[in-house]
Length: 225
Image (cartoon, rainbow, N blue to C red; front, side, top):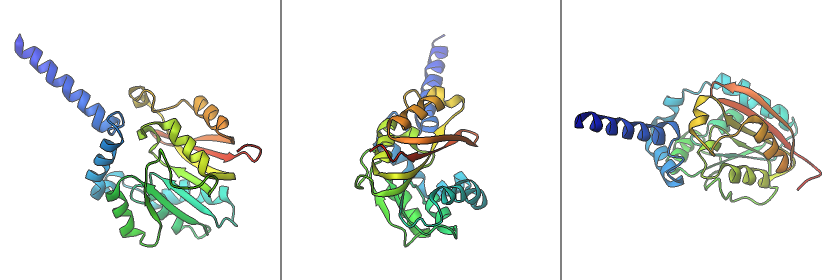
């Protein structure tokens, strides 16, 4: 009988470890652990994700260029840029004439980005305290990362803070059954819309994107700060 108890304890420990490391990517263990995990797998991250350049163009870069307008020459800050997925898509789009700045806490992820984007500004910083002045960015993006922040609402506030009046936000919102395993890290579409409205955005649009994500689009309301 003792071996059954032992097997149960081992199975429970394995399940907890899987939840902490795989499902939530260390989100409940602190930002340092999240960064450590991304540092550990930075060299194989692009192979794991299997980004499709054509899909990145069609569903990320092209809509963002359209939202920014043909005359946009400002700064686009990509928070949690990782290996530079969004900067690569934007730089490859002939209609984008702005400057992309990538921000991430993982130095090894940024090293991977630097290999492919030698002339793109890359900044090591926490999304909880972005090193940019209020209203200094014409746009900000945050792809597949919000739920791994120590405080997702704080991350949204920082994104709102650095976006200028009439600026654009593109983020993602985790959906699917796994969100039930991430209390306090994910939002319903209705709650996220309310949060963004309270932070000074209007025209919030949430669109299906990937199996476990929606895209979230919003524009900074001119009448708010």
